[in-house]
Length: 325
Image: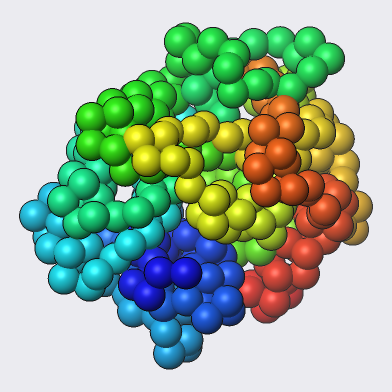
């Protein structure tokens, strides 16, 4: 194991905090970087950062990853040997109204990370991509595979994530440092993102407000619990491809669940029924996601363990404690 710290970008984010926490529990030193932007309530980001700050092996740097000189200096000066790049501007619908936020965070930010890794001698870059790169395609009895076409993004967010994959492929080929891209499928769990459906539905149901069900409830998602996601991220980090290699892995539950089924499961966990307003599909949304995780399983033994009912139950317990319900 290398002695340098691991850099986790987006460490005050949902996945970033949990990955950093797992690495710290393993005895790693971790440097986190986050700009604490206001896409959603920064209070939750501060809560996550404070939780990480209780670990003596952790240090948070408040900075923008698109500041290439500052990021390069951090990687070089701290002797960073491995990077888990999770910082990004998330949200499909938000990208329609705020496209330049995605240009800076996702495109310029990813390029900044690549340059910092290239000049800093980083041994392995693991970065977050998204299931959205597959576009809108029907379920056909089998999961989306990494070698399936990813050429028709239906949102700007998806387009930036696919662009990041192509940038990484070119950098791996040109400069030789190993990279692994992870296509995340609908991550959920305690301390999650408030813009996600399960989180917003919980807030609405518990305050007596109706929920808006897009796609008239016909959508399906491969909901993946945060602990399972972290298993995959850390497993990949430990297994870099050979020099010059760039690999893409799906990381999901491999069990798509209909939106109405998810709502019913959440209602059971909350002990309350939602008032539902059915809405049509929104621009940029996809009908379904479904991860084939056989490639990740072959590399790491990855096998999701937390079923949706258990995972949503854990989220509801956390949410009630957080809100003091």
